[in-house]
Length: 310
Image 1 (cartoon, rainbow, N blue to C red):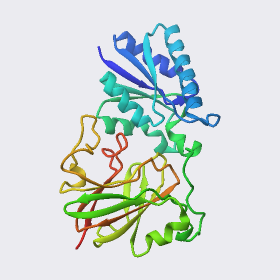
Image 2: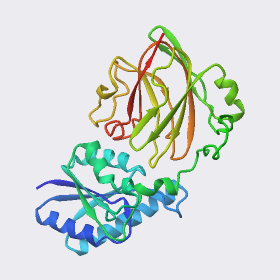
Image 3: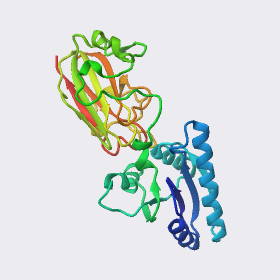
Image 4: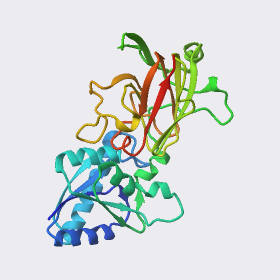
């Protein structure tokens, strides 16, 4: 007997899921259904997304019950990784079932959510291929998330980038004062960036590429762009630990409260696919690590060492 988390991050037919659930139930496995409140084209508010997800959950539970399969369920976070992390804290499931469309040559990286979840949470993942299903996690870049400015049009100069300005945060760091902040209004951008080393950073599933990982000490501007398809964040720590050896919490994500880490920069809210954000800090010489610490993303490879020279 096993506890099984069924991740239903899709819309469309569900006969393949029901068939797989019947087999697991016959083996006396306990099934818990998770439906992330992912955005759909007709949902524009959190309430609408939650209501749509709850409707999908009710429909799936009814289909399972009609087939003689008992299961319980919940609506989870819109981000499938966060939803799974939250559910695993409550259920401690032994393994996962994930419904995907059949694999084809089209949009292959979007269809590998089962592989990503297996690597992130170190549990066996059974992939159920459902003809006609549409995987919501793979379509988030198309549906989009509100609240962020788009990047520059093709060919636009760097000064035209729409970015965000936030309140400056002064952090005591190893005897030095580090000033970190995020830009909000492009009118202020060039003044804020004046004299800074500008380092282009590209985040995508699931890597962070830094154009210059060995900058000089001083004022540094990280120009972070999210290539998607998922939302990401950019967090910079000063630490003696290598990027691949950061202290982890029980959930497998970086323990940001660890005494081994000094938090230097944080993008704050997630950077959505296709959007950009500038983060500026005055950094003394030393070793730093940049990560995305959204659930599962660090362990999937979103980490990089940055060595600042004196």
